[in-house]
Image 1 (spheres, rainbow, N blue to C red):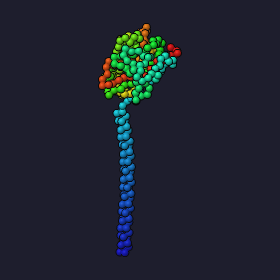
Image 2 (cartoon, helix red, strand yellow):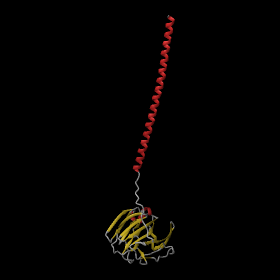
Image 3 (cartoon, rainbow, N blue to C red):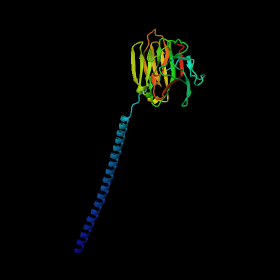
Length: 274
């Protein structure tokens, strides 16, 4: 009996020991599963947070970016040439005969630009030597080139249309005209004494120091559209129905520190169908 009791007790102890080991192994497996699930949840949270932060960062970058607005360049030149002059046939140092002036009209070359250029003398006005009868609808194009230590050394350059073709006097600001106020660095005005209109615009002229700027003008009846280097500065009524038109360009009232302004590549065109 004692031997049976002893064997029974040993079996009981062995069973309890095996149960404890099984419970320990199960607890260990359960803990590992919990740890793995927690790790996956943490990784998922980190990924979501990273994605959110990236989106927020991109949104912040986009919010801080400068918005650039472009209206395009809708200038359309005429299809019939009425006048063209690039001074290619005029020797350097000579005077052009296609323009008349109350000052000098010397043709020069520039080492940084191709072609030849008409130097605008101070207090001098330039008009076409031969009277040109403009149609109702026409375009004017030319280039202005400055040579200066700083653009504010030029004071100022004006161009536009007046009713007469005389160069007896210096025309500083008459008719319907554009004033390039280089001395203010970024000041351009489009004005018309015919209809008492004066429009001021901010246009950075300093970027055209020692660099050419292309001018494009459209005249359609009473309307005038002005572009500087493909930027539209004005689209406005500038003439009366009966206003006669003669193109003029006037050099600055004065230069400082040896600065100069020059013009070239003139093209005036009309339209076959008005």
